[in-house]
Length: 555
Image (tube, rainbow, N blue to C red; front, side, top):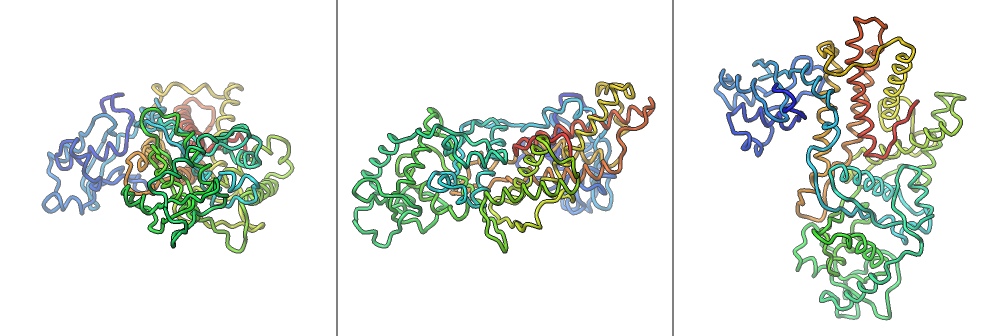
């Protein structure tokens, strides 16, 4: 390794460099070739003896009888460059060409400067408006009882996506702004969603009047008094003025060459509800005087058709923004019908009951109320966000089912393991004050060769190093601007990452006694472990922040 110039390490960068070395290609060419010649190992079993593998099937394709020439092997072992993990050893075995990373050096470099591993490697630019149709007044604000679980899922996805986009450097705003004091604002805040609000008297009346004028004079306006087999726009609301305004959306889709829109879009009657939404979108995008902003409609599958109508209507009205749709699958509750508000209340009651069963009389006072609130939010978010957003989610909402403080699943398990790290460092700091242990020395004074337990490298190699790459991937499809109305976002990845991390950390922590006897000859290993687990704590905090979940001090 050539020192700090190689940092931060990236798995993808390393694989591309290994691809080039295996075939002797220039690295700038290798970047365009699919990364299928090398595989990063992740299981504890395989990481005992290798970190990367080029399978024998690949070697036999590239070389006669799978025999890797000595010059090629030498080139592979000497790969280097910015972001490339240093290779310590390699050899051809039955399974293929296996490589082992210089783990001691990587521990030192990563734990010595963790910051680059907790943020995306690249920065985006531009303004993204996250539009959540479920929150418009005539949908839910008259009563929280009307917001469905599917619509709650869209709000949580929008909230999560906003944090991820901001981490990548985008400016983000939300639509609609909610009236101050509305009940839905309080309900959302109870699960960590701080949706923007405006005074109740705020309105976009002038913009809405202008939009009505545009639609009345639009070349896409249907000239016939009757719908002639066309369809009214879904949703309630009275017509504006004395004459019905109908727009031929199908004609607009064809002439504007829009791809991926529902073929059943036809002639629709413009409704006040739709114009109100467009007025809010116009206001949200008016701040962009330069490049056109991106509007991401985060909608449930049941509302998708209606939102496509609004989308095309806005294009007819002269929309400058690029529009995409992130569509969420339905939320199913077999054997029960329950709305979003009652679901949140149920999970909170179950969380309190489960805590009382486990911790007894300790569960009282404001501190525990706050913990239960956070744990309820964690439960709700992990249940609704851990599945690919376009797929359905099935929930158990029976009173006797639901949350548990035990078992490796979901938000409770993740928050519990994060709290264990807090408890560990509280215990260590208390011992330092008592004079039992010295302060943790600088990384440069530690010998990381003492980290030999298999879980230690696994936690660094599978979680700390790849996290930045994960953040890069989460907004990729939006940045690439692929054709079609829909966009697929990997919104489930953070939840799955945290659950997997918690399983591996829990397994390690149950095996290893971190705070050993206060004996000088044991300090180096203890300090190395504390450095690793301190980095893991920062990783937890960073990942949980994308879900608006604050770490809790105890459980």
